Length: 493
Ligand code: AHR
Image 1: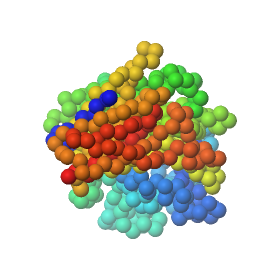
Image 2: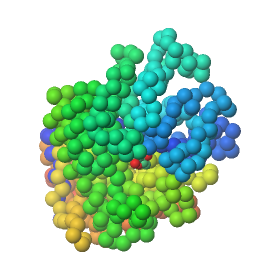
Image 3: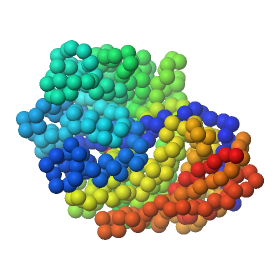
Image 4: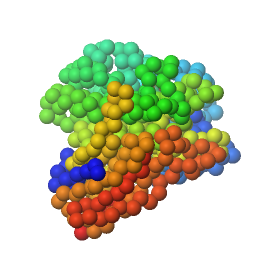
């Protein structure tokens, strides 16, 4: 029987709630249709935001939402998206499908979305095709409480109080769609932009996130940290899970072999190595300052659903994705000493989404349910955990059967989240709790075949359900179904 050890006496610190962040780009049907339908739409909405989608997302307690991109951010000129909607410029989304969009969703609408969700805003600013002045003006527009040209413009547009946007990304993927820059060039630009991104109140200091590395580009992280580390609060990292590293044939979201299933999980597990190596570099060059790692794009990336616009990145979501989410979130929890934020790509209708919509219909994906199972980790104290588990070998790739993280909330309750990666066999797990005696344990599990999914005709095919656990002298035991993600809440004596 595999053992899971939880040591309640050892912790790396607090799990930053922002690890459970989301990302919403002007891409396909994420913002338009998925979230924002406009006030005159027949779909029930409040100030243009879909009521069904907002209600479902609120249950996840989203801490922070990144916007407007992605690649879109480095083509976005924020002035196009303010003022009376009828007078806004229609632009072409050159990154994603070449579609026109009317800019009816801009700064004020995004801030209304964050108000409805109760989350912080994370703006990704345009460095690739914008100017220092334009970016600096956006911060002033959002955050200046007194009298200034940008604060006056905001007031003309109906908003008296500053929005106090805390998180600002200095470009996106500057090595690629954000300008094809060299690390050295970007580091200099980052210094320059950062100089003019001001905090307008000592009570609302802004938090600057440098555009970070693609996967294992350690030279990028080292160069940015070495040259611009003193002007930033965090540096980002992007790592997507592609079953096949061929961008023309990444693999299907729903039709996959057992071998592709294990390859997907194996590639996801690489996040640990990436987080550890980038974190080492950050520590080496931070000079004692606290600089975080913001994994502000992660998740699965498959071939689009057949028949959909290739530029819209619309994909289905199965139990395989649930395991990918569980593994990544366990890794972020277990590296909460450096990982200050993570933003799954993306919130609705794009890549590894929480929610899929079709007209007025909506389905919650298995990934949504994993975020719900893990929500209580937010702001809790991470606890050391370890799974003594067998190794599953497929082809030349090995993955552990069980993958775990744990935390203790302010009320003393302990949350243990475990994924059983074995697609075919249940695992009888013995959880050993060090430093605490359990008075009660409650379990919930999400499971199904690896390709199980929720569709518009069967929206409840994959649902969390109760999982029994039996208390023992030193913890508890539970039978974890094959291909499952479980969450156990332990009430200590
Ligand atoms: O999330 C989709 C795209 O992936 C983003 O726009 C870009 O930053 C990344 O390459």
